[in-house]
Amino acid sequence: MEWWYHLPLIVSCVWVFVLGLGVGSFLNVLIVRLPFEKSIIWPGSRCGHCLRPIRLLDNLPIIGYLRLRGRCRFCQATFSSRYLWVELGTGLAFLALFGIEIVTQGYGGALGLTPWQDVPGLRNGSGALGAFPPVSAWIYFFYHATLLSLLIASAVIDAEHRIIPLPITYTGTLIGLIGSTLLPWPWPSDPSVLQAIPAGFPWTLPEAGASIPTGATLWPFAGPPPDWAPAGSWKLGLLNGLIGAAAGMFVGRSIKFLFEVGLGRPALGLGDADLLMMAGAFLGWQPAVLALPVGSLVTLPIILPLMAWAKLRGRGSGNELPFGPGIAAGVVVVWLGWPLFGELTRILFDPVMVGLIAFIMGGGMLVAGLIIGKPSEPTSPSERKPQQEAASSA
Image 1 (cartoon, rainbow, N blue to C red):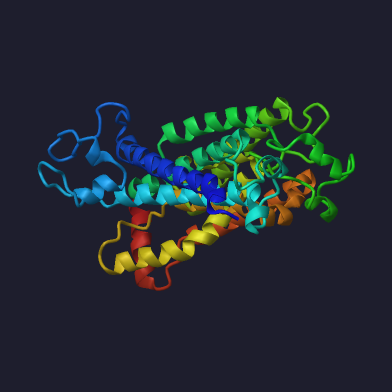
Image 2: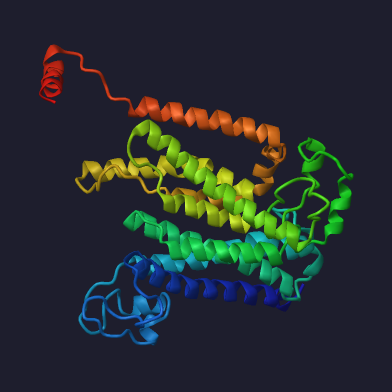
């Protein structure tokens, strides 16, 4: 096969990477300004020390930072290396997302790759190496790349400032709801792909798992979808986004309430609940429910040793732990690993089991909070005496 057969694929990958660098540059604006409630439109990019505008060529992603060696052209003030890493990381993240979702689907057969997710609509439209991905594939990618960008911005801001700005989560939730309505499950596949599942067949059974495709939103809110909101309809899409957003908000706020009752102090922030709400609007309610526990398992083994090391070196800033990066990581892991998580959690299509699981997990978190937050009893008379004196004086 001639090399130029691969040219459309190469051009697409390069363009996606460059697009990611540009989006990463914009995310840096959000990261710097939103925590202080500044406008992201005006004024233009400028040095934070001398306030002089940054030239257009100096503002190019990656290139501008490297050619200036991370310093202002005028006052030589040092720029944070975060600008470089956010741009590069976003570019690589876009390229990885394009490879996982589009390349393995559209070009998988020709390249000997196995599609990771089951999206028949993408495989039917772009199977030739000598062709660019179809419009539907680009819409699919842009929709998910938008969510990925918002997750990156939220994670970095929460890691630095312990907040997740409302303009990110609320705007993202609105975009997710619009996208879910316009791209209803199983889009980009035709609803006829569901003919592989017998009508009325319980989707909780193992026989149905391999036949449930994913779409822009991973799965519908109920399986099989009700007759009044059939697959591919805007009603199903809108309900899927609304129920996903509500489920993410409910899970986040419920965990916050249960832990605060037990610990007697603030625990999970409302911004974390809003982040789950945004993810649910984009992807559906199942990933929103799974993101927090999965994210905790993924990030805690990394974050806790780093916090301990920083505290030993005298650089710790308290015991407050940012949950935003963990939630963002959990959303991405569940979303891209949905073939595995979906197979393990088909039970979430059973309302009775969902209620039972929620009751057990909620009770467990409340008990855990009470145990962790319970004050220790004084063990010696000297420890009891101050408490008795304080009680008598009161």
